[in-house]
Image (cartoon, rainbow, N blue to C red; front, side):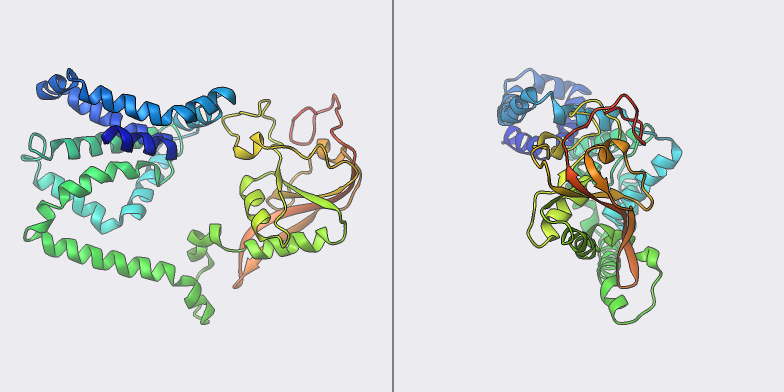
Amino acid sequence: MNGYIVGLGLLAKYNMGVLPAAVLLYLLSHGAGRRHLQTVWPWLGVAVALLILAPNLWWNAQHHWATVRATWGNVTGGEGGWSSWWSFLGGQLGILGVFPFLLFVVALWQERRSWPTGRGAILVWTSLITWVFYAQKSFSGQVDANWPIAAYLGLVIWAAGPLSRAPWRRLALASIAVCAVLIGTVLSLPQLHGLGIPLPSKWYVPFKQTRGWRELAAAAQDRLERAQPAFVVTNFYQYSATLSFYLPTHPFVYYHDFSGEPSKCSIHGNQYLLWPGYEHRIGQNALLVLDGEDAPIPKSWIRQFRSCGTPENVNAASAEVTWHRVTMLLCRDYRGPQRSPEPDSVGRYR
């Protein structure tokens, strides 16, 4: 059963592998664990997990190990330091809640004589090993707040024991109540703003990924109606996905990487790089959507068309808050890829 769960977890996200690795380290750390590793059961679980993951690995082998390389790039790449570590810690406080997080820390300290070797040792140690892994990773690069979520599974199960006893029970209930109020407040911010209650725009940051897409699609549709038939290309996969959903005809919105990566399976790539391109749209017009205001227009893009208009800055706003800022460029008569020895404006030779 454990191998089955790990296999399904790995299919969802590779960082599931950190949890069984933490279990392995725990088993290696004491005699009873090492004796358990000499039986067939742990390795049978590994075999089951690998069997479930096998189709994913086969696909990766046929596509230059795209997912594996992207995950490895997340593990080894990026810029870290103390600022990244504090950002990681802030993310964990936000995910778990400040008061539950502090309550777990205090409970671990108060119960420090019982949990290292007790029945709940494997729950606590695997959680701590997993958490420390991501904490040290933050010194070398960004760690998204949701990555260490598996670190809390065993900890929550263990904490149910001490937190169910007095005086912990009252503190636990109070922390849950405070978290419920905070979550309710955050989720109700759009409604409060709609009622005319003045709120700082920075309070809306948590909603950036869920707001403004209809407004962005409306701006894109207004420009597309001037130049049918036309297709849409973006340099940000999130724009490709949301525009495809919110545009009235739900077209396939292409993604193009202008960053200079030589490989389609770059560690900075995404699923769209494995999908068909727009080379067959010869003679059609195109709308280019670039992330940010006054974004530089790649010369390699302009060379592919008979003519291009003037770049336009578009702000997707609602409720008096600007959610997304993009640059849109409408070009006519796609002629296909045009190669040139000169680098384009973002440094990529085409």
